[in-house]
Length: 136
Figure 1 (spheres, one colour):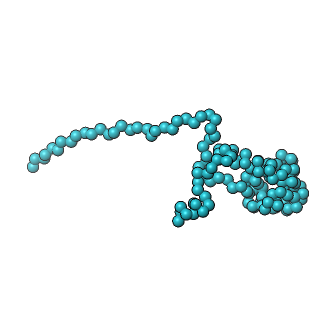
Figure 2 (cartoon, one colour):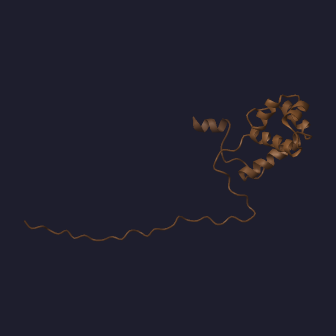
Figure 3 (cartoon, one colour):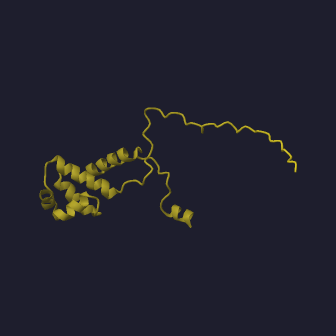
C-alpha cells in the first residue's frame, strides 16, 4: 500500500509585537491611583486622632476624659471601627487642641497621600443614583 505524501507548507508565525507603550508621565504628575478601594473617612479620621494624640504624648484615658467619651470608644474611633457623630468629632478634636477645619485638612492630606489623587479631582467611579441606574 503506497502512502501519498501531502505537501506541507511552513507558514511563519506573525511577528510578536509588544503592546503600545504609554508615554512617560511628567515628573510633576501624581502617582497613579491605587487599584483598591478608597480608604473610609472614619479610618482616616481615626488615624488623625491617634497621630495627634501620640504627637502630644497623651494617653487614651486623658483625651477621652476631656472629650467626655470612654477610652474604649475613643480607641474604636482611632482604629476606624466607629463612625463618630459630628458632635463627637468636635469634642475629640477640641480635646486634642484642634478644630473641624484642622481635622478635615489632615484627613484630606492623608487621602491624597494614600490615593495619589489631588484634592478636587472628579471620581472616575460612578456613585449615587446614577450608578444604581447603570447597574439595574
